[in-house]
Image 1 (spheres, rainbow, N blue to C red):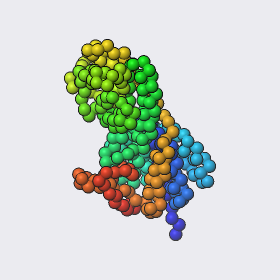
Image 2: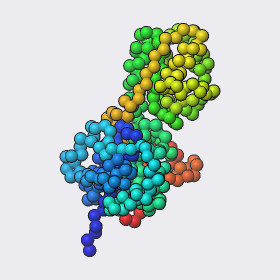
Image 3: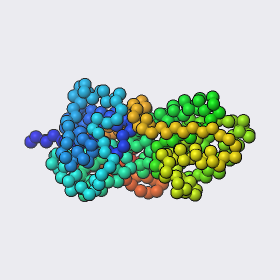
Image 4: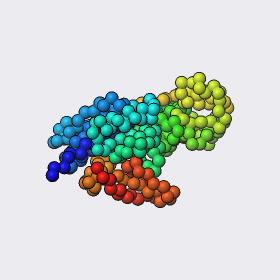
Length: 335
């Protein structure tokens, strides 16, 4: 009796980040070379399921896939907008009509919440690999893209520090992070920032000005580096802040208004350069390990459940490698 060949779907969802193509390559390599699975790349995430748009991904000899190790972005495209749950039936129908036995999504916090609901409603065999430069996926210590983005920001801060010191200027540098300040905090500490503003801790312009004056009075420092996450919030919200092009410009303007000492200020919004870069080699290494865990350690196919010992909570969908106070359980699935 012949055994039918399994068909795996893979897509990237949400904002792009470093390491997506590396993760795709790792999944395809071990699914096809180790176990002979067929892999379909779903284009533009759930939109590809709705429109039945998929391409075969073949790693025989890895000739066509090796280039992904040195390519930023995602060859499958991504989407981070639209009413996905409003089209749930169409998405689920796409999964079934493409003949998928399982689906792996490389996605962030927002996509994970939506896809988890779809997987439950559609009774999918579903796995998710967490990726986000915000590093805000629950129970995940490190997500794909975060460490590389930190390196990118730290490099930028190093360059900005040199020019700030040369001209005795205070630079306000804005990084990504609407609701989580991990990127600003890690890169700010590593890059020698004097002040770090994150969404989790409200700031005051008065406190910022006092610290800048202390730098001058106590240490004779006339330059400074302020790293601010895009979602940072003031203790007392100013209705006029929405009229500024960025939170960094707003903060710089308020410092200029309220500082008791004259300060020359500059603003640098790093923007999307934080996303579009080759993955840090350490991340590329771990993405290969993830794929090995997926396809070699459990050749019949398993879900991975991470049990968080401190809070006593479990999650069936994230697949991180670095978790604090956690251990893994192998959950067999039949398909």
